[in-house]
Amino acid sequence: MTLNPILLAYQFIQHILLRFFAPDPPPPNAKLNRPRIAIIGAGLTGVSSAAHCVGHGFDVAIFEAGDRGHLGGIWARVNNTSGLQIHSLMYRFFPNLEWKSGYPNRREILDNISNIWHQYSLEEKTKFGVTVEKVWQDGHGRWIVNDEQYGKFDGIIAAIGTCGEPKMPHIPGQEKFQGNIYHSSELDGKDAKGKKVAIIGGGASAVEALEFTSAAQATKTFVFSLDTLLAMNIFGQEILLSWIPEMLLRKFFYRDLADLAPPSNKGIFTETPMVNSDVLDKIRDGSAAWLRGDIVGFVKNGIQFTQRAQGVPPGGPGKEITVECDVVIMATGFGRPKLSFLPDDCFEEPYAPPNWYLQTFPPGYMSICANNCTYVNAIGTVGNYHIGIYTRILLMFLVDPLTRPRQGLMKAWIDMTRLFKKRSPTPAFDFFTYTELLWWYFFCVAINPFRWKWALFVFFGIGKGLPMKFVKEEDMLRERLQQYNSK
Image (spheres, rainbow, N blue to C red):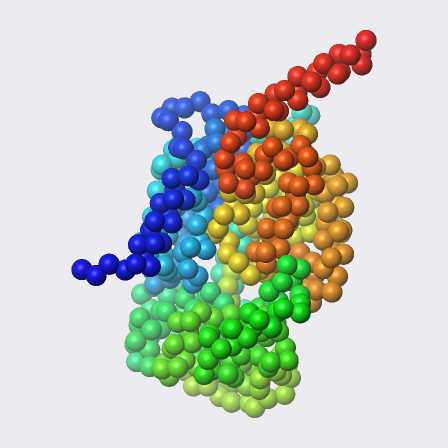
């Protein structure tokens, strides 16, 4: 048996992360402390957030609208052939994960979610079949979920994600098509052997559909996509040094597929279809074709399509072609779940989501954290360390009054970010990069000296006890000052 040094190194890194950064699971029947957090959604983000809370000694209740089979969120509903489209090193949604491979499949992802759920005794804290219709605060500022039967909570984590029900848009002439039409999330048991398949859409859904057609032995797959990425920059726009990563991507990623890369006078992150290297390999071997252009409509034996040349914008001129196919897969994504259960004033313009403090905290509600469910587009991953950081920022706000942001300052940060990104091709909070996210976290902690003692806890989950001692001392000092001033 040959040992893979890269895999060994990766396993060693995972062991280090588990050993030093994973919070300890609570002992059986442990009595957890306040603050008590209501977590809405039992997907990847909800389970991870809950494990971080109980691992640091705070009580939770998880509300999931679906049954036990919905544990894991979107991963519980996609195809068995689905897998991770980015390296698992960037999908470490909890520190104690131990991935067996660089690109785990759906089953391994669900098993890890379930293991965390059991390890941190979350089964007894999860309420399946409960649809959250509203949350509201009592006269003391404590949160009530639907009604008082579930008790009261100090904070809310909305972890409903961005993938709700499958989207199936109607395309002109669809009723004329004589083949089969499926959504990309409903491919288990479908037959594509020896058939020509057209995939409408892009991003992760298209890649998953392409994995299905490969496993099903389709003769040819056509991918129609308009997906683009934006600039790799802390403020989401092109900068002087953007040409360096763009040149490297052209040289080592696209290589011989020059037509898929944008012209050199345009940023590669503003024009490039979002694909991974496996997709490009299938294009090279001829089993797949990636077509840039606009769909005209269905005909009985396929799809009419306007194929655009490199650099021509959507809707621009091109050559109209008919692509014959037997099966069409709609890789058109999912509808976005609604946050309408939150208070109405969370949605008042110009501070409606995603225009919130750190993109997750509604101005005026530092006790609400909408984790992984307000972003529109980003360069990064939904399943990484930021889940824990956002959760620990919320815990910091709840246990330490001096760290809490006032509504005016929350709005001022939003306005400042808009100002910095005024030249961005998208609204300020519609797109961000991981670099920008790190800047947000650093600024959040650095701007308030009372948050400095929480820095290791916020960023790494280390040292909750020491900041709590400072908090108790600060509370005692405030009480003495109040007593002195009342004399």
